[in-house]
Amino acid sequence: MTNKNVYQLSLTAMLVAIGIIIPIISPIKITIEPMSFTLASHVAIMVAIFISKEVALSTALGTTVGFLLAGFPLPVVLRAFTHVVWAYGAAWYISKHKDMGKSGKQMFFLNLGIALLHALLEMAVTFLYFTNGDSVNMVYMIFGLTGIGTILHSSVDFIISIAVWKVLCQNRKIQTISNLKMS
Image (cartoon, rainbow, N blue to C red; front, side):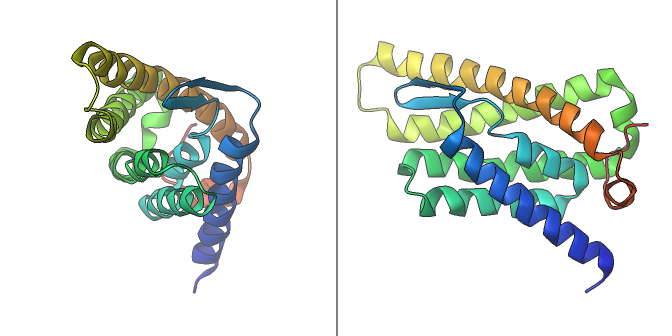
């Protein structure tokens, strides 16, 4: 195992731990049953997408398993599992466009793309779980609460992730192993 692999594995372990602990202990949480939106709960996965596809995939899978072991309800675990798709997709895209961090416009569209895919995937899980109610409530639950709520939540977490990433990039080791270049 190379030093780069050990460093990436260590970062992944820390990101998984952070990604599990934030939803458990964060006091900044909005709960509108059956959804909950915890500020910064996606930051670990979003930072992982800036590093590599492997780190993003491992972090998303690790946090999903962590949610399962922590006893989160199955719909929450399944929504967390959908993060594997958008995290890997975003990390793959960044690996092909490594200098996009230098462009606010490109980062805006990356944020928008992640938020839309994230929302669509979580809406699919919500649809599977909550289609037994009345149609007005279902439309509100799927499109309003899950769709729009996830787009807003994901976008705010992405902005926080960029701020965290700028601080982390001051470390040369992180700069050398990551895909996203900010300057």
